[in-house]
Length: 232
Image (cartoon, rainbow, N blue to C red; front, side, top):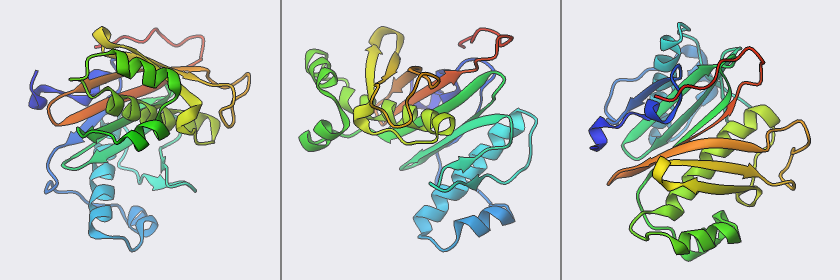
């Protein structure tokens, strides 16, 4: 599969709306409320913010919502309309957003990273010992350290809206299922905000091409009437 054929929606069950832009020159605008919350920033930060909001509104449009401003919370997280969960990511030359009704998915996270090696120092900081042992045992042609880093970023984005606290890299253990391009994230007991009513596991998927690593994570809706997740 080529990079052009990959769609970030393929990392999610059917019903998740997604939009992506692989052109930093693509037209993008902000709503007045978004202009206000953005304030004075660098041109790069402004472009990232504009493209992210453009993708977010496109995803919401697929759900029949909008256009509405996507503002920011106290820790700069995007604020989605009531009853909707979503996530935004951007890296060099790429931006994407996904959204879902919370009757289907409780919370959602995505991340994209340019393929690059991680230094030993960064690897030590973003992994726990069992993860490093696993990375050393698998095919080194695959950038597993970067995939793991990206997976944790997606997990953190899905966790925060539900629990209200940010995880550290040491607070989640990623267990990969390489042939399924999937992973399980186990939230460790010492994670901030973790208690008996918070999620203890998240599921995710990943895709790697010659340029980028893409990951997703989600927490399913807990409503009894929710239908089973149906992956595309």
